[in-house]
Amino acid sequence: MSNNIFPVITISLQVLVAVLGLNYLRKVRSTFLLGLVVILCLTAFVELAGLYYLKVKRPNYYLYITYIFCIFNLISLIFWSIIKLKLKLILIMFPVIFNLSFFFFSLEKSFFTFMTIGSVNTSIYSFLYLRQLLVSDEIINYRKLLPFWVSVGFLVFYLPSIPFFSLVNNMRTRELFFITKVLAVFMNIFIIYGFICSNKEETY
Image 1 (cartoon, one colour):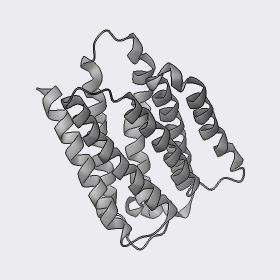
Image 2: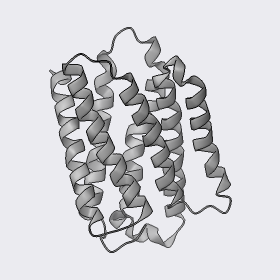
Image 3: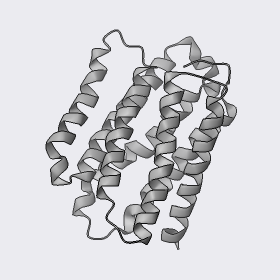
């Protein structure tokens, strides 16, 4: 039953969060928000396209590998715009590692290898931003900061995904894949809450 319910829930939530993001973009303009909305819309499109590919029994590897390449580079971009490090060149290391591994190993169809590297990068970005927030005056109003809820949502999904994607090639069945659907639901709930409750007058 879960295998039938969770895809519908995750796709519905993904479309909802993309629509909320587009509406939020009308009120706030920033590199962070623009990149985030592109990520959300792209994810909604790929989820819907993936469902269609599954229905017509067409291979979807190139759809998802292109999505992975775009999504993790966009995540690097949005965190680059809000993380304030004296040595910002440190942040370049993460997308460089991801992109080099992508171009060297993409022909081997190492889908979950790229997901693992991207998940590690995203988790590090989220921790760096939350640490920055913790030692700043902005921590007082953290509940009204959209990047806070996005970072928490990303951590909820990507941090537990690291061991999952690392070991998925050794799994005998795909019965545990519903776990990622559950994590995606929680991630989108956090982002939706951020869109609803964050301060529309803030700039990121």
